[in-house]
Length: 307
Image 1 (spheres, rainbow, N blue to C red):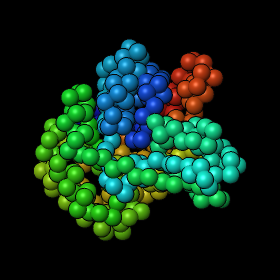
Image 2: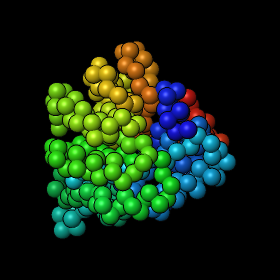
Image 3: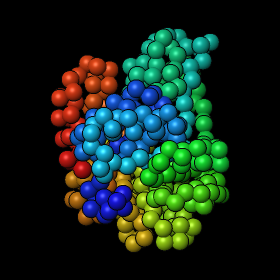
């Protein structure tokens, strides 16, 4: 059933955040976006987070055509990093607080359950008080655990220069999981040629099994709803598309309500759009009980329809 939905070429995938382990937020996101028509919910490889997403879907009372994708990552991938504020260097200017899209900073302390590793705080800090710590997924430990939760897809975030790590983790998942697998990568670490060569190796490991390639433009940059923000995602998908690889293609990274339209304008064929930062941003007031359910549903449904 999952694959039949993908083949319709109009999938909407909500990215709750690979590093987002805020149980209440994930449940609310799954609830409102399931009501709005979302098909796929991408969540952290955390058992409690997976269960929270399932509760949200159940609350929506729309259980058909709703699927869970769990994100795991390589050691260099930005999606698996967290910010830390060094109290000895912090001047309490609160600039980091003002730019955090997850509201993960309070009293100059980072709530790691909310932090998604976007590094906006790190880039704005003038006092070098922000540090970034990486938390790569222990594949062999986590995969057996999350499979027991009844998931539909595992996505490997592979924005990394370590090709051996990517291929080894991909092979382990392939050998231990029977569902659809997804690989999320972009051109920040590889040339176009190297990217395509890596994808061919990845698909060779799958040996004809169903695979999603998620073309990631600019990770966690989708706070603005314009064409430029989503341009790199569409461009990455275009490169992959022209290789006629035997895989489904989704776009992510800077995606927004203009993503599908731009892909269509550029004749770039995609099976789905995965939206994280922008999808969370437009309902953030609902997540903290400052927006009504009806208003949030209308906003979310409009975004889903655009894709």
